[in-house]
Every structure is written in C-alpha cells, then in structure tokens.
Image (tube, rainbow, N blue to C red; front, side):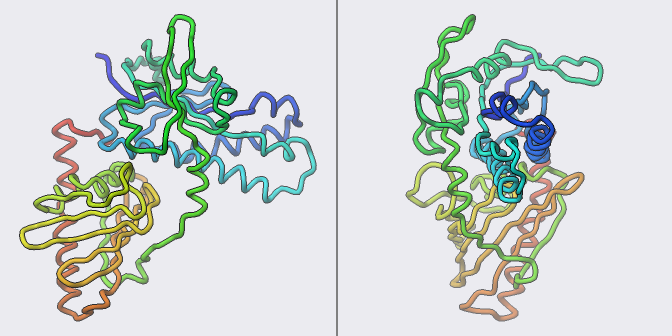
Length: 357
C-alpha cells in the first residue's frame, strides 16, 4: 500500500570544486566532520534512506508531523548545525593547506518534495520506490544560484510548499521553475537559509534552569523530543492535555510561532496569558505568563533519552505574591496538568492521528 510523506535531500554546495582544489586527506576529514554533524542531528521524525555522494536522502511519513512548523524548524536546525560545525573548524584551524583555506566555499542546500512512496525491503535495507521519490533528486540540478543569487537554500516543490502551507510560515519565498526530462515543468519555491543563521546568532538566551526555579516539574516520556515539542507548542494540543476549555494565539505577528508570539488559554474563570521570550525548537522555549494576578517566567526544557524524552518545566518566583500558598497552588496546577500528557499522546497514536515511529 502506498504511503504519503516528504522526501528531503541535503547536499553540500561546492563539494566537487572543493575536492578538486584541496588536499584529499584534509578535505576528507573536513567533509566527514560535516556529514557526522548532520547525522548526529537527524532524528525522529526524519528517517535516512540512503547516501548519494555528498548528499543525504531522508524521508518522513506524513503522520509524523502534526504541525508544519515543526517540519520547517527541523530543516532549519540541520542547517544551523552544519554552519556551526563549519564556522568552528574555520575558527580553530591554523593549518595553511588549501583544504582548510577553502572551507568557506562550502555551504548546504536542501531539496524537498511531497508525494507517494512504497517501502521495499532489500535484505537489511529499506528502499523507497515511486515516481515522487525521483523528483527531489532531479531538483538538485537547478539554476537557483544563477537566477536568484541565493547560495544556501531549501528548495521546495510547489506540492511540498502547498502541503506545508509554507507561505504562512516563512519569510517571502522566491518562485522558481525548472524543466526536467520526463518530468516536464516543475514549479518550486526557494527558501533562503541565510536569515535562519543570522537569527540564530542574534537570539538572546532566556532560560530558567532547574536550580533557579521556584516551582518545577520533571517527567520522562517514551516519545521523541520532536513529538513532545508539538504537543507543548501547538495551542489546541496543549489545551487538550492540560484540560483547558480553549487556547488561541492573540498576537498580530502572523506566520509561524516565534519570539513575541502571544497566547490566551482559558479554563472556566481561569485565564492565562503567555508571551514567548525565547524559542529554540526541540530543546526549550521560555514564556512570560500571567494568571490570577501573578506573573512568572516559565521554561519548558526537553532532553533526549535513549528511549524517549525528559521534560522539565521550571517557573520563577512571582514578584506579586511569593507565599507558600501560591507556590503550592502552582505546583498542584503543574502536577495535575502534565499528568495527562502521556495518555493524551498515546490516545492520538492509537487513533492513528500521529505516529511516534
């Protein structure tokens, strides 16, 4: 039976030129470090299907993502990791060889398509079959740099961009079209990755640690961080497991959830207002929250485990009222609210709404 999902290829730009102009022994070590950095961070919901020269071919079933923003931020994190590794090697090296001098010629591009596929077992390996599987490989051959000037990019087929509602989630996209033999005209959208790196460098860390918390909660969950992240950050899912009557976004930013996004949650006469102060996908995010006449800072922190995720929720002391009664009330609200997270996710998995594999 055919499945539907996204196909992703990450490809090192400048790979061939770099190899031909550099000493092979050092070039190999540098390229291996860049591959290893990516591989270390390719986790659920991405699955590696294979390697082709300087490219990594991945896919993810459609049901692995509840929120399209999670998919986009998964790709952005791969680019940030790649460039962090690249910059660190540039900063640390004192070697005068061509391989080390030419590191700055390398960059990363991605090609993404959405469609049908069948998984075929070949011994211990899995191969994807289907006409749609071919498309992202063909998309690697393009004229994006020549026609747009964008060097680091994620190139989405129009089908993938529409399925993700990408225009609602990102900075302005650049329309692009290529013609391929047997495929004909393929319409695409270019997503510039340079601002992703710039924003990551400008971000100011705002984090409540366990040691600094006035009230805290810690639980282990048998699901990967990306899945937990979706349930913590998508308002209607958060409202579900916390038992709110409803949750809504109330800021005027538009687009994806990010710093300064605001939310309103309600349960009976209880109204909670939140504003995001810091947003580091799949690791942590920090909120400024107010309810019942008090305000506090809350960090939700995810730590990968071998078979799941450790979730820590840490609240600061409210300046308006730091009595023992308030502390016990906040602790009780957290304990009762997060107690339902495991069963809520399990219910959605059993109902076929999401998959954790």
